[in-house]
Image (cartoon, rainbow, N blue to C red; front, side, top):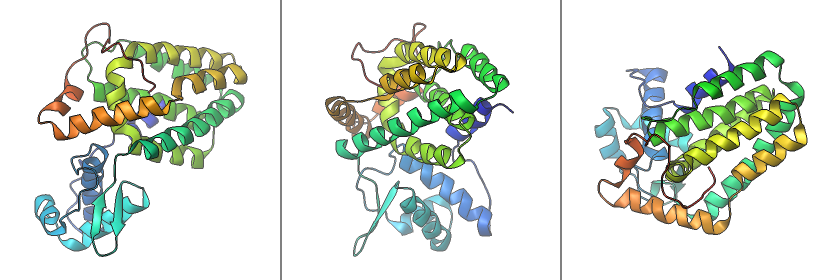
Length: 260
């Protein structure tokens, strides 16, 4: 299986595990809760009612708490003494910090990939990227999953497992904002991916890093705008369905440019 295919499986993980006891049951509850936290079905800052969650997920409090503690370690849930478990906040400063860290990791990954990736690995990544160029009829969620997979595949080709793990965790914490951004940046993102891929294929590390930096970098005003739109999607009934609607043939959304 290619690096891109493996990464796409990671990027598209959801809460479909139906284990019923012991460790498998904890894993199933963990995946369900993670999906709810990633897309803010658990609303920002909301105190989590363990009893209600246990009933909704058909589990007891022990596996629920084990799953919640794992999500605390991953930054998707917080624990406040005297208040209990709460969903993470959605604030511009945290999102900006995560994008800044993502930029550092992605630039390191693409530099290492230029040096370490096999010719076969690069050819496979280029072929898969070309195959995914047509986004017509795909949803924002699907296109974003493919986008994540491209970046994770580069990290995989870099040959640093810890870097890959860190990047996966960041992706989960900013995925909702990336859904917001992708609505207006599908066409631009595809072009920027081609530029990164060309530099990778040429093993031109400096060009690859410059292209990656330009692709990812995000100003605070852009973050604030995305967070504001994110809150609208979370709290305005029906707003989130836009993420599941097929994209137009040209992949165009609004004209406001953002970085994804």
